[in-house]
Amino acid sequence: MTRPLRLGVLISGRGSNLQALIDACALADFPAEIALVVSNVADVHGLTRAKAAGIPCAVVDHKDFCDRAAFEKEITAVLETAKIDLVCLAGFMRILTDAFVNHWQDRLINIHPSLLPAYKGLNTHARALEDGAKFSGCTVHFVRPDMDTGPIIIQAAVPTRNNDTPETLAMRVLACEHAIYPQAVRWIAEGKLRIINNRVHVDEPSTPHEALINPPA
Picture 1: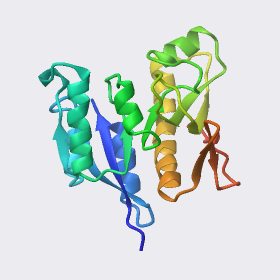
Picture 2: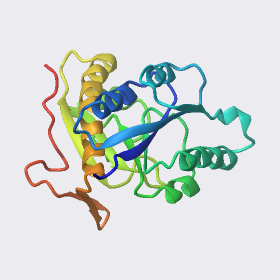
Picture 3: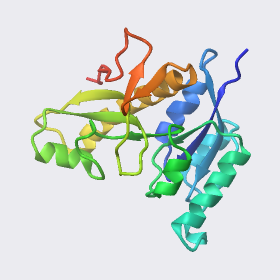
Picture 4: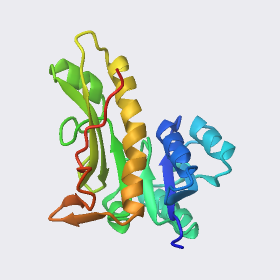
């Protein structure tokens, strides 16, 4: 029997996407397990979620290091000691250096609250509403050195509403994040993804990698 893919999840806050991965990994047929949760902030709720699920945790506080390179070197050491196969960014609020991203290339994924390449960076929901965008959404992608770039694994589109605020839109997008992040991990763990010319190909014809997940009403 093939062993489960060992996940390392990096967080900085409440850990709602972490919880979605915890719930997925609890399913009997899910081909991955969370082997370690790493936070750069102590006492965040995400660590409480991980501990409640019996998952090993580590705190690597960026304020304890002289620069980003030293901070990331420690994170890599912690992840490699835990024999992590895939690193999942789940609300990790630190910009990563090229060296870290290149070290973990094709073993590092992120979830972003927009339909990339639109609305990279922060305040995605407010910017989409200000522009009058008819759809917002979320994206899981492999990480590359440039911020919020990299081969797209899966996306979910969420229609905007005339009375939306950034907060109401964010709630509906978050529900879709919780659906597509475990799906992306499943595909990776099952060996169904190939990156060709910087694009992801999924060996599952019935489910395209730019999947439209039914958004909440």
